[in-house]
Length: 504
Image 1 (cartoon, one colour):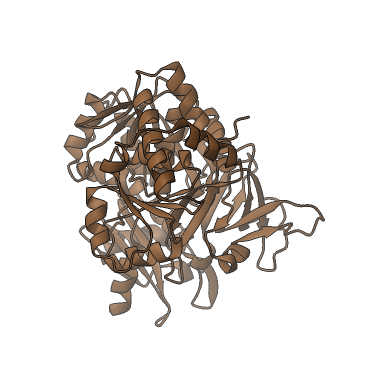
Image 2 (cartoon, one colour):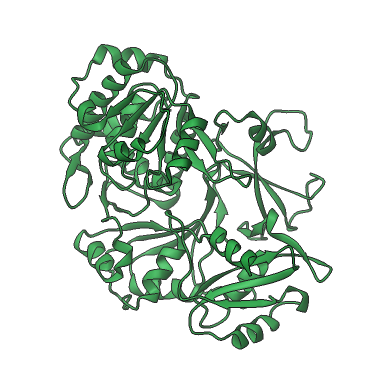
């Protein structure tokens, strides 16, 4: 068993030094170049800012330079925290205050973003200067000896329900186990060509970094904004012979809606991986027709849990059958509990508690929310096992596959009945012709709102839902949109829709 994620890079750089590790339309990095640049920048970081405090990465979220930068932080014996530099200055200042970094590593765009932030106390290193530093093996070896397997490796920020972001801390131990398990469950090998579309401040991107480096595989960084031109996107995938693509369902649906996804148009793709949201069957079926040689996979997880379950799509689900997210990883232990914290009978739904070698260690500098989200021995069995409260409601089917019904906080009381908004969204996805949308609850009026895109009418949606749901579960208000709003990470932006709903 390895003890530091740098060992994957070093082994691969020794085995295939001249193989291209990462490339985009302007630059390429071999594994030897990646290791050399990381050691140079790591030395610069260690000299400029001694200590173990995390390093903030303020870099273009789609830049190839981010890869040696994050490995450099590991060489410096620290944890890296990639921040979205496109966010408003006030939000960026808030994240820097929460992080309290020991140093900031920034590219040109990051420096410009930092200029709008007041009172930055941490030393700032530019990528351009740091990469010209000579690597010092003695310094790096000394730092390596102090870095242990349970030391923090990354701090990935995610939105908090209170408006204060949460910095999820993952250790070398977490990444080592997750990398091995991910390679095994998908069957990746060194011949896979990964197509990276997720920005590197987003947890989804880790599948495009660490398994490829461990295997000696190659990653192509798709051009920033290419998804706004779906025809060019398809052309890029073919020209670069991409065999693996991980995106949110919203991104996959956007390509379908553009009308460029012809049958057989992507014969080289072998892995299509959908994460973050549920994927309706109809657009998925079109992707499957377009990629005759690909396996398609749902995966369920979060920034705090990484991956929990992976399932290969075998065909259209039967009418009324809930779509599973696959079987849990063999190293994942799931417990389902009711509102009182008691374990529910097998097959019944409950809030999911997740234990695995790669759940996060906690929230950075946030003891209160860490204690609320992680619990030890929740069933009072008398021995140590640490679980993360997923906040999702789900259950295991008889075949061992996991079904996720929705968030615990999406359970509402409508017309006197307790219900889950996720069940309404699941029913919408089974209506022929459904494109995309979401369901929200307006507390001040007690009404359920359905936002949607596509050619279906309100009458068609109401009739489709009446055949599947009890009357008290039907939406009260339907709002047709030209397009659904999305976050920078291409997830559905429910906050925008919530604000519109509350403004009515």
